[in-house]
Length: 135
Image 1 (cartoon, helix red, strand yellow):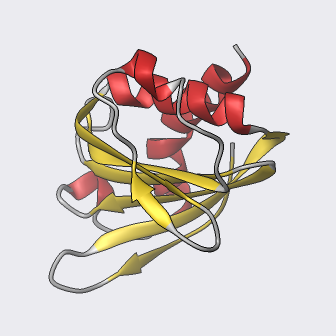
Image 2: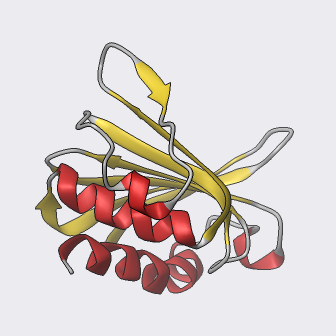
């Protein structure tokens, strides 16, 4: 994935908000494959799906069930990533190359919205997610 930009959102629970481009657009099946991988490596994962009219929490309890989620316009997975060791929120958009990622500012690595540092921290992680889409 290619990092488009990152900014820090201050508040009670500050986080780094970023936008990414996939190498190739992907459809729902690819998004589900990525979400299934993330589900396995996220503590207390929550998946939300929706379209421009409504959203809902997906009733899934394991990675295999993620692969059966009915097609929607977008899918978001939240929880604490076992890979990057911080709370993350990743939103995939069906039939597009656009991904939004939010990372909580809970350690020094994710304290500032420095493009280069953030890219180094997140790029391998998100490249692995993208590979899962097409694997």
